[in-house]
Length: 199
Image 1 (cartoon, helix red, strand yellow):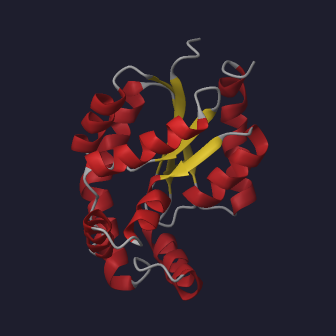
Image 2 (tube, rainbow, N blue to C red):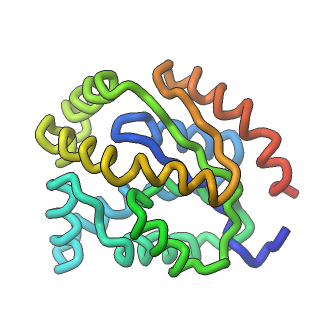
């Protein structure tokens, strides 16, 4: 195992599938470092800069932020933490251009431990997002933006799931159940994989 490379687990799934919730649980269980690309982008969007305003506009439209911006934020955050941990990356790699951008920016300076691919019925997800919007204050948790986000996910993100499977190991998870049930399913698959990377 090469300690000079970042060790990453990609997380991908449709809006509202529970990526944040599961990542927080996995951090506690395995001591991973978690970067939600969406969280990094929303934080940047609060800043009164040209880049921040651009990100805010794209988020409101339910569109994917250019790979260069997102990769820069993720890479900076990862370097601050060092290379001796496993990083959970809540995937922003929503389309082919972004996959290529990740490979270009990180080159061969990372090891893909595995990808965790979440699936869930869209009707369930819409209900979850509407409920979350009542308390989250997020600009993208409204029905109009939700529809745009699902459209973007279907057109651009779903085809990438096969690409991730070709890049390395992957785990497919049905996220219909409650958070604990979903976590149990992930852990069953992940335990053996992680052992290879933990000293």
